[in-house]
Image 1 (cartoon, rainbow, N blue to C red):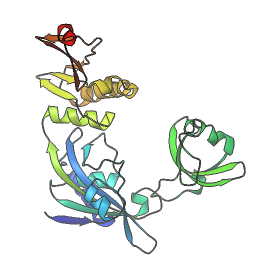
Image 2 (image 1 turned 30 degrees about the horizontal axis):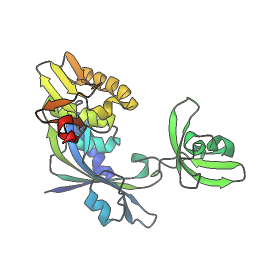
Image 3 (image 1 turned 45 degrees about the horizontal axis):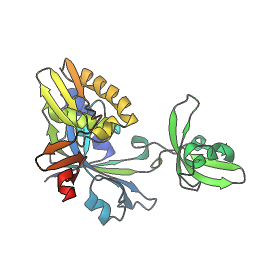
Image 4 (image 1 turned 180 degrees about the vertical axis):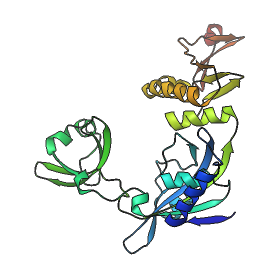
Amino acid sequence: MTEEVISEKNADASQNAATQAESKFKDGDFVVAQMDVYVFSPENKEMLVETTSKENAEKEKIYKPEQEYKPIVICFGRTKLLPKVEQVLRNAEPEKLYEIVLEPQDAYGERKPDLIRTYPLNQILNLPEFREGKETLEVGKTVTLRDENGMPREGKIVTITAGRVRIDFNHPYAGKKVKINVKIEKVLHTETEKVYSLIEMIYGTNKNFEVEVHGVDIKIHVPERAMMDFNWVGAKVKIIAEIRARFKAKKVIFIEEYVLKKEEEKTGESTTVETGAEQTKAEPEETKKQ
């Protein structure tokens, strides 16, 4: 495996080269990639803060049991990436590790004091997670509020005083120099692979979904768990829009099968009633009387 180190300076050179030649990957192309994100301390010591690798998370002691560690799917033109990272990836060689070092202005921006806001304590306590007792109000907790345009944005609680809560809406890595290690593990070529990836990107998982591509028709078999999930309704609309924009398909068929009543199945001397993955066996009446 080869490795290439890309600093701010030669990232700009890569951008200029990309304007003179066609990129390897274009809008609508899908790749699967491993990625590590490091931030530098004031002493220029790097610390791993995000990773797709369970092994790296455990090694650097940032492992979280509730988090799923796996490669990310990137759809060029849709997946939001740092501009300079995207420039590198659009011309990247699969299986080659790229190390990209970025100053704050090319990463997550400088910290802005005006993004630290103060709110009445009652307003924050009225958020659903606190009102319903699901979360405890404390420093370091992340909350979601709406900005002046009604758009949701996340911030971190930095102080709690009598009747006031200060929330920082700067990106957690704002003002920091970062390093991003990224490697493309696989390029997705078939429409079936791409549809599976779209489902995962938009809905969060493609577990137990089944995808069939027949010419210009795409069939998606939806598992029961998704059918009962309100989030699936919105995700389905987005999936249709993405397929319309990025595929040659003329029809998308979602198959959702609802079993309304379980039927008893008689087999000789016994009756088997199946409920989910469990089976219970009932003896015939004649056998019970003996």
